Length: 144
Image (cartoon, rainbow, N blue to C red; front, side, top):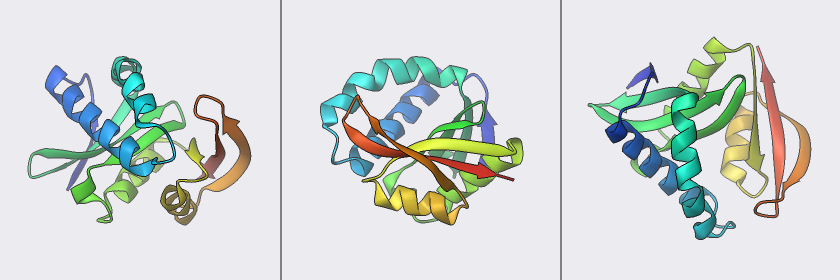
């Protein structure tokens, strides 16, 4: 597996990123209406090129990515077939080498993601409600 920073994604790469993003959100958030994620597609596609994108590639295929805005992790997404194989950890470790502190928001109901971040030395900083979907979420932080 290769981890690299993607500068200026092509339209084809954006298509791949968006497919991974949508599938990941639908699978990880059954407590959020699927329509919500579909409605976010245009805004997310427009925002991706402005984020620092750390990608995972295996045998020439994009299998996951992490979106970083400053020290904020906008998300980590890994294809279903590549999950539980260290891809998310590798992406997160790459982000940790680029930033001395990181933070993110994660839905409380997404228990596997909360456990993953705890295991990766993130601590809950505060809890709030994401008003867009009426779900409790944690703001979690990590420091080198």
